[in-house]
Length: 236
Image (cartoon, rainbow, N blue to C red; front, side, top):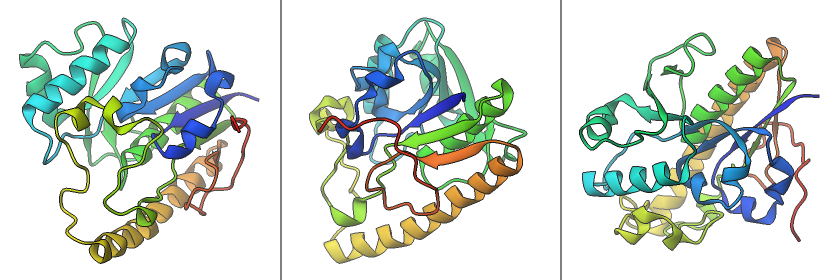
């Protein structure tokens, strides 16, 4: 049974023993490069979403520089085409293979250069993970770290890492910049959860029809549209 793992940054990751994924094919996103096991995985792609307000150019350069310093030579990095100018003018990821991606694609035909519909960057990674599984004839894709539990901690950022491990946070980034009160945040996240669940379900169905099984390996995930499969043991 061959498996591709997709790793997001939810707080559940810190309770899972990722030494079991050493040398396993993985797709990672965003700040996952700060995880101590990152260097021990077979990273097929590391994916960044398009930089957006309130991330400044200074923040973006610092973030990508830190990431590039932690990545192996030749590693495939997906950067949004809208950030291409910043990458090239500042000589970022010079030791990696950069793939510039954009929206408006058709899953799975145009992956990874053009991505189909998504709500979260984890769903970009899921599309890429399924494409890897199809190309390399894997049986399963298991996605971890998709807690999507923001509705339970509005205005408080929670990931598997300590927040100050992120250079963005150290430079003043706050992912709740557009949320002004708890009620607004909870309503927004409830809407997002419905949209997220629908998109996950859609790609699970497409993948199943193509012969690839998709599972949610995230303990206590609020996503119920993916069948659960916990094969990475917890550390507790």
